[in-house]
Image (cartoon, rainbow, N blue to C red):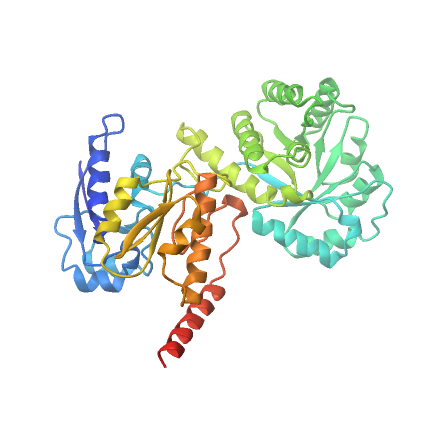
Amino acid sequence: MSENLLFLTGKLAEKSLHKVLADIQADDKHPQDFKYRIAQIGVSVAALMTPELILRRLPDTGDADRMVLPGLCRGDLTKLEAKYGIPVERGPEDLKDLPQYFGRGGKAPDLSRYDVRIFAEIVEAPDLTVEGILRRAEAYRQQGADVIDLGCLPNTPFPHLPEAIAALKAAGFMVSVDSLNQDDLLLGGRSGADYLLSLSEKSLWIADEVPATPVLIPSSPGNLPSLYRAIDAMQKKGRTFIADAILDPIPFGLTASIVRYQRLRKKYPDIQIMMGVGNLTELTDADTTGINAMLFGIIAELGIDAVLATSVSPHAINAVAEADAARRVMYAAREDRRLPRDYSQALLGLHDRRPFPYSDEEIAEFAAAIKDPSFRIQVSDSGLHIYNRDGHFRDTDPFKLYPYLKVDDDASHAFYLGVELARAQIAWQLNKRYKQDEELEWGCSSRQEATEGRVAHRAASLKEKRARKE
């Protein structure tokens, strides 16, 4: 049954919204079963819309079954649902993203599910205090880690290992101990660790001494038969375990190691398998977002249950957060039987799939409709656009736009425009999406925006203007 949708918008976006919705309905490859009506409620910019303003200006919703607001509309939508009696939701932040939004049935993608546990390794744990270990563990938990892995360094004493495990357990963490030293593993297991990384067929006796779940590895690099023997021995004992075929770095056997994982899964379709992704993210000078995306695609296809992630190298500082994003995206894509596209921007650090939603012609139409002195800034594939009622100017170099801005005697405004034009230029250079008054999006590398600086600047600007008038 066809659904009736009501879209609310502002003056400047109304024409574009009509065109986008008409194109969606005319798309034979992705037919959409809905009828729509657009209500323009008298604001210039749709992002300025609030629930309170809508309640004042929208008398009723007619025969609409659902109301869709601009994605940047802020406020409590339950007030609208209470008055109009229909579901109210935010669409995408940019109306040009509506085709992707309706490609998912008009719903945000569900990224709440995943089936891969993340073991986040604190590589230098012996060199940290217990308090330092807890701080690092909490940071990893915030990034999505499920288990905190305490790395034991060769020939480095770790006398506070039992204390560290006890403190982590008390704080609600699952804990694993990672060592090549059998004494460390035995001590870790007896101190309450949940997992031990790693046992081979030569050290399986440790599993008989402690209740911790062992992670099994080959007794020598690439020796799958030894891993098979360790697996068979644990299965005969009825013990829980995880198997790891070991991912090798480039150019020391990466391809062959991926083949080993495939063989391991084919031989044992029901066991738990771990992959340590740090040998690629840490040991390759490349952005880790793409590496994690590719690895977690393989992980999703092979049904791998756990990963060991590290965040040691400065370029891999967000590896745990990227692993969390990647496991969710790849799980959703596999379950939906869809390509891993249009689920999340978290793994798009440097570029965007649709960086320039508006053409030069569309931006020119916006500029022609402006009747006030405030500058608007947009970016198209040809460069930067800045416009107000006095003109529409464009270039790829912000310095060449300065003569048109007429802000010689307004330092605060000049500073603001300088910041925004610099962001716009970076966005144009990198093929990224630019939104005026918002920081650029860097995927998992984005920091939480602090508004104090912007608020303080605006206050200083108003004070400066008042002083000039006086």
